[in-house]
Image 1 (cartoon, rainbow, N blue to C red):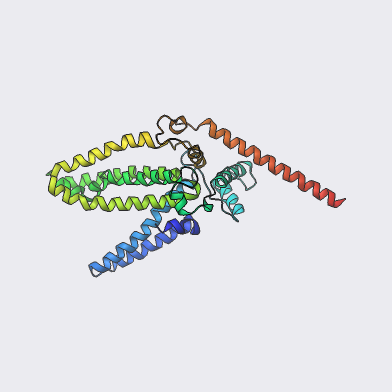
Image 2 (image 1 turned 45 degrees about the vertical axis):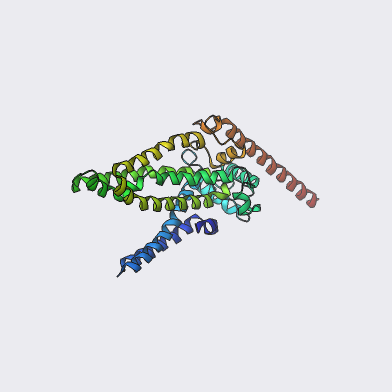
Length: 329
């Protein structure tokens, strides 16, 4: 949760460095532990650093990747416009400079979205009570619930207690139980990453760090809850305990189908545009929400912004040239 305030202040790389440092300190404390209390302190410290990194890494990746996979974003804040152009040029590659047309176009599109959102003029209460820009609260809830689903699917029942369950509930040998547990952990590693990409894209530009912090907090809270109910559940209702997780997992299909818009082949700014239209709660019949390829409307919007900004720069150049000529005369 600390990254709600520090994420944008320190920036993504510095925040991850700080988080990694905190994790290192926690690891040292745990390594040097001579009792349970010291081990618990080490776990808490390392957990704080892990929370910082998990809430930041996905945002950073979403902001610096190609649109074809994740979109491209640099948060443009007052007084940092030149730095933003340099970062965009570096991400563009292929010899691009801050003056390149493609870089200026990306900058103009991002700035246009930020200017319309102007989140900084709203209080937290206004944003969370739905009185801020359209869709902010809804987007934060969608991102947080994605992480909740990631945990209440019961995945940590298997990742934490898989060997125990195979041996004690299913009667499988210890060796085969360990092999199956290892295979399951690899599978979890691959598929658990998918939820993070949706979270980083679903939130508004200026709320992306805060939304990710809320989502990851939800993740760890649900993680704790699942771990606490697992052993009592197995001991008290046995195999019926798995029916609960099966029903919960099945419920994710209609939830995702009806409530979550497509984020593939969209820029981060496209997602903002979609929610600016105040779409209905159910998006399964909204063409902009469900089509796989990038909507033509968004492509045309980018082109219009680029043309408008180019005309403004040309007019500014002509005025400067006129003033310079007049002064020379």
